[in-house]
Figure 1 (cartoon, one colour):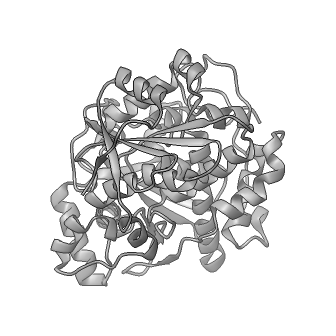
Figure 2 (tube, rainbow, N blue to C red):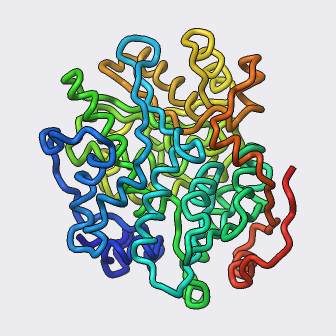
Length: 439
């Protein structure tokens, strides 16, 4: 399969080329040349997540040298199956995507991309993986590439706008991972990363790729856990499953939309945003108008210009059809607090702020008449946000073992202005500058 750019000004790329490049030369995002069509019967006999993932992704790998390695890549990336379980009222469910090494859903896509790039790496060359993060992506990418020969990771994150535990994770790897704390917002980090990836002269000196959700290697694998969960539910009940997905940069929600378009038994898809309501405003009938992001309790979703909107427009070229395809809602900080408290008091559930946006939106949609079985997507472990969650619950949240191990290591990051030239200089000089330690 070939992969064109959303902007149609660059030649279609092979899968390997698209994975290595991250961003298309015309500044667009790579998308599949076609979406395969499946029915639930196409997955008969496949129960485990790696097997479902390999079957789902096989058409995208056809004709590429990576095709023979797809089963092994899926076994590595999808070693941890996310639990799908009941959540409160009958017909409500939660899909827990936070049981990976950095306690966030980003682990699946990051590990898949790392396995793909490692499989096609050229001996003697070093590829720099540049990633802008609003909280969880950077740690997942760092963990996936940490100490892999032939790779360096450079993380951009907005200083003071991620949780302290997220910041510690981002800087705790060392070795081939450099964390840069940018004096700006996530949108600044994303702008800087895109500029570097689009700078041909810089890339000639420093081979670059991306591990943000703009990367095809992040998008494709995220379809797999929606396929796996919806198939399990379909087989158990004979009913399709709706999903309520917390969203910032739209990659996770778009993966769910693509899985449904490909024929998986998925009903409604709702996008839960925080106060950065660019997407809900569009789906309510307004124009799509990116704007500066604002800081919220659900910081990993603090995005004012979601990159994957380009892919959404590719998937649904007609704006009216686009709006019909998706439900969406914005959840304010006060509602997030209420959602965390309510889930704990009524259900005995402990939610992170991002997952709470999905829980609040599901309740809202139920009140508006949403029928059928519906699943909120739990994107991060609540222990990553103790300063938000613990005061609301009046109790400590236990740390997962992998997260506790990361927090026990020293952490360091280097300050960086929100400036494209400053990033280019940092990329050229590598990791020599002395770090600033985080406490």
